[in-house]
Length: 167
Image (cartoon, rainbow, N blue to C red):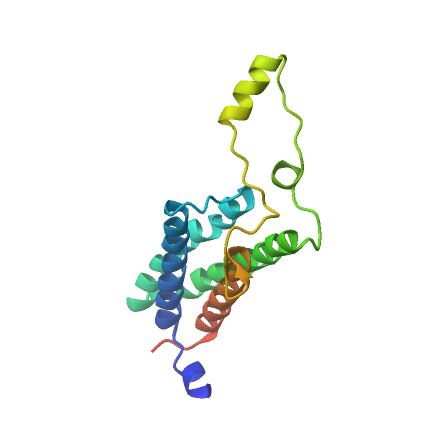
């Protein structure tokens, strides 16, 4: 383990975060393609990846070319994925019933219609994916839980890369 930790460089950390983040978001899109519709919290958890993937690519390019802005980019990546991990824990806690989630996707919402015909049309077109119901568990962990784990790993990797010496 120590040999692995000694071999962490800013370039390797940035490339590692890039690969993990890209594979994770592509995996989410694949699950969605096969019918696992994301809830509102799932979609919000993706924001970290939409920011993190291009940022990690930029950090990898900067590190590979010995540009001075690499460490701040890695620190920013670490912060983004710490936040993503916390958000994943929050969402997993909503799924397990540890705390309430947002009313928009865990509670019942009052329809905003003026008559029964509008209400019936709204029922036919509205598809609500609840944030407190798990669509899929992998090894007993929901996708929100996996987001927490993977994000914590990427935050750690980015942090280690920011503190490491360049190769």
